[in-house]
Length: 153
Ligand code: MN
Image 1 (cartoon, rainbow, N blue to C red):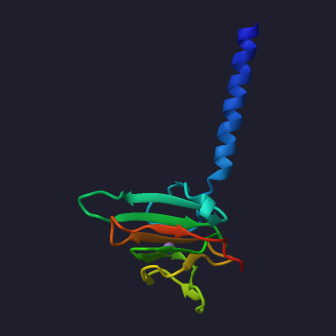
Image 2 (image 1 turned 60 degrees about the vertical axis):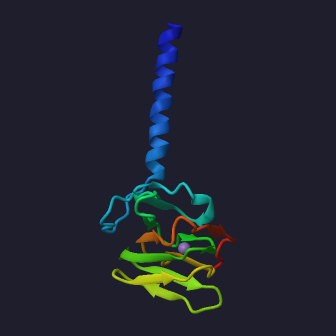
Image 3 (image 1 turned 180 degrees about the horizontal axis):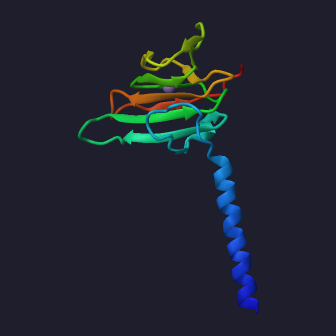
């Protein structure tokens, strides 16, 4: 009897865990083209929920790293900079890009953002739109990202 009870409780706990995970993962209502990926493991450097799908990992052959990032509405990176720069290719939704001290730039599918080396900036979704972009880390292997404070809007 005790074994049966333990089994039932374990099963219910599994259902609970699966349900919690299902709630965290929201499918973007935009065509992200590539798979949306998993909740972003770098989430502590972002505001709001984002998802990351690494399309090509950093390695010694291509010296590049390419990922697909999907943002929920109003989700965004902290202020940060890349010592080797970064290129963004906008896929879907409406987004935002801003360099420190400069005008906010509105992003649409097909836009290309070339982010200079060591320039502080942030990128993310518009307040009312999901958003996805490809992120290309350039100038590997010596491209370090420095994360700064959250963006206040
Ligand atoms: Mn960046």
